[in-house]
Image 1 (cartoon, chains in turn blue, purple):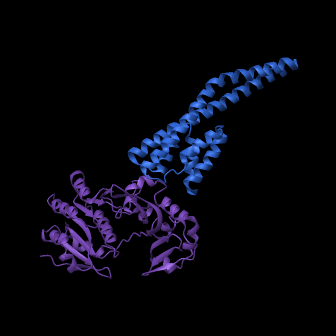
Image 2 (image 1 turned 30 degrees about the horizontal axis):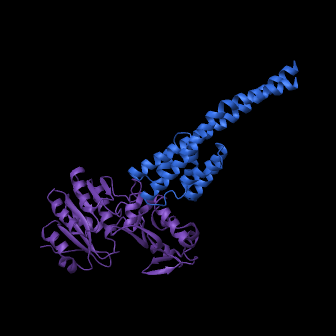
Image 3 (image 1 turned 45 degrees about the vertical axis):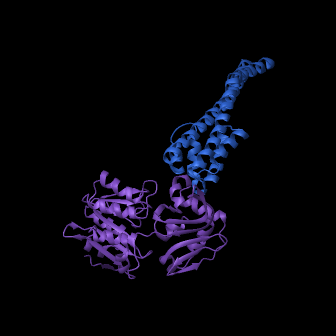
Length: 166
Length: 290
């Protein structure tokens, strides 16, 4: 009886690990996608209304997958935009399982934010948005390719381990 | 955000302590902070520039001060930057110097910042007590021109006059091209202009007056610093709309004001019922209008 319980636990643990890994991929994909959308929206706002950074952050903190990130930046703005963006990115990297290139793309959006005239700001943000969109696309592909596989692999690994032990 | 303490909050973090430790007399009478690259910061107070014991100002301090004054959004104040100033929170005003960037012969921006001047704003609630009696006579509002040399407090007097009249229920529209009267930042006014006041910020004065007359149906329009013929022309036309004009202009003496064609034209046309000159003691001396 205890052997059966042990086997079930192994299968459950393997499945949970597989689902956990797939969830990490999904969280990263959603965050990067939300950041790319946010960058596009920020460009539109700056282009049309020259909306100040504080107002942009306030609105972006309200909803969406990247809301916690923008809320962090807004809360840390007292220390300066560049430093606030860096700290918030470090937190987001841990929370959304970002890789080195993802972090670089997020940092590029905040690098120099609000320091330039409208034209330069839009050009800079355009480049950052392209980078984020590319990272979001890569994350999407990774998720599509390995998401289901990871879930199944977790279950399969658990089942194999259970078989081997029993 | 008002006054000396508010202005200190717009200084770079590395210089704040030095400003906070200044003698109370300087703090009470401080008018401007000046940051010049490679030199110690100074405070203009009691008629002289006073050096502050702090390390020399560098590029980083200048950039930090500018970022604080524009709320970290240079693109949002691009038009002001092009003209060499930024309206900061609290009604303070940052003047900038550096290398002008020209595009098609006009200044498109500033780079290589070399010095900054933060003019400290303080709300003064008795600046127009005397003037109000001249402008508001037995429930009747009169058009008024305030003349004074730069730095004597024309804008402060006009701001207080607007507030006082607005408290009386007079609907006033303010054409605040450079944000000096209302100190609007992100849609919020830094100064109290009264409950019946509408402010149009950032729009060239001549155009602003037309817009306000057409859209806000004010009983009076307030304009700070008439300097260009186009502005005088719009005053002349505004008089025909039935709204009173409250305005300020630079003049070093009453005689000089009457000699200048721009102001003489307005006074002769009867646009203003009252014209006053602010003397060195900030008293309002009414001018004899023909």
